[in-house]
Length: 86
Image 1 (cartoon, rainbow, N blue to C red):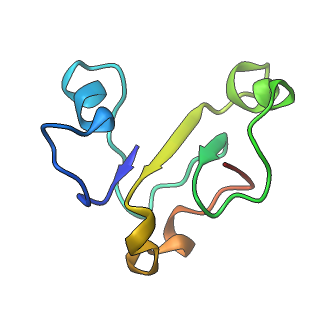
Image 2: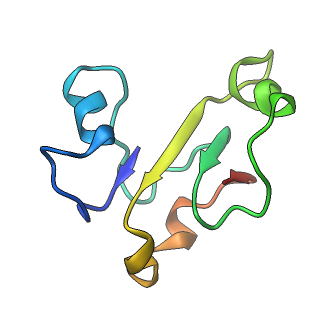
């Protein structure tokens, strides 16, 4: 998860998952070759994306944790993925 600190950490589901050890936070500049859930995506995530997540060549799943009202602050080039989904 790339977290940009746009929400209240006590109410943020991404932060809670991180505190529980179920996901890990990624640094800006680190890339994910798997599926990335992002507002920049042009397609919806679907069952056919499974091969990119956990198939033989699967690379995982990442999420951009940000506010839709502050999208212009996100360095999209540093977190780009070939498989961006909504």
